[in-house]
Length: 104
Image (cartoon, rainbow, N blue to C red; front, side, top):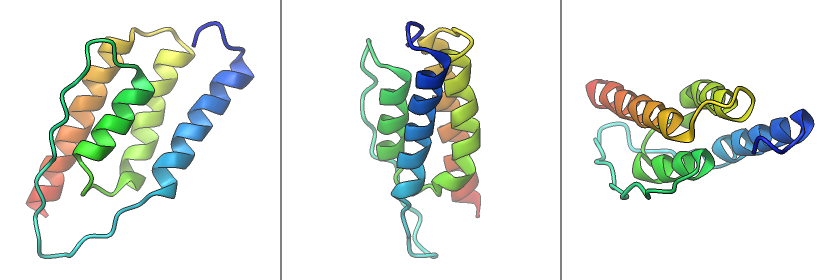
């Protein structure tokens, strides 16, 4: 991704944001759903991690996660932060959002 121009990097971020917004999930209010764990590949990309975590935590409203996930993705794409570190933070973000979901 570092070889992409700033404009193309922003396009990747915009597209990932669009996908997260495009496919919201509506759930019954009284049912607590469990995550569907998907094993983390060793060579996973940040975009791949977002897709995996979105599938794992399918019950979460992604509107609240979008800004935080986009900020983490930007750190990787624009600032060169290592993918593994960003993916760890994304994992934590989704896990803590799931805990919030369970407590509601």
